[in-house]
Amino acid sequence: MKQKLFAYVNDGSGVINHCYIDNLIDAIFLAIEKEPYGEVFNITDGQSTSWKSYFDYLAQMTDLPIPFALPKDELKLFLKLRCQGQKLFRKPVDIFPEAVDFMSRPHAYSIEKARDILNYEPSVSLEEGLEFTKQWLQQTDLKQIIP
Figure 1 (cartoon, one colour):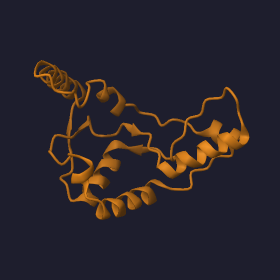
Figure 2: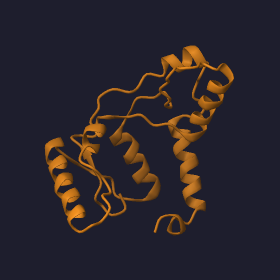
Figure 3: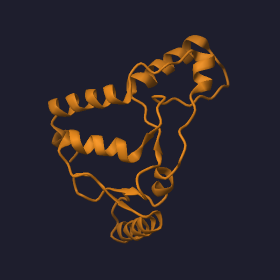
């Protein structure tokens, strides 16, 4: 987003399955406590949020430009060309074309199984998690973390 290279797929209506770290840790401890051997759980914040809503909020809280939208086929073609160029110049690929499919999924993962078996309930909402992230960003020099 900082490099103004970020774009939504189509109109950004695909669903992001976000999970604030505290919610994930809560789910891990519940799984340790309940010992549901052999079970697999989806863990998210339990909200259905569009990529547009998520990244518009991130852009707003970091004073970065709001991303633009590109049709799925055009964005996938662009990323294929970018990926090939990065490989050609022996640079690490920073995003694969398959990410477009990921960002255009229309459904949120269900956490009902985790709720039923683990008694999992997300304690941190998206809004709270993003506010905590904003506070962390204000206290952190990202140049020391990300070159």
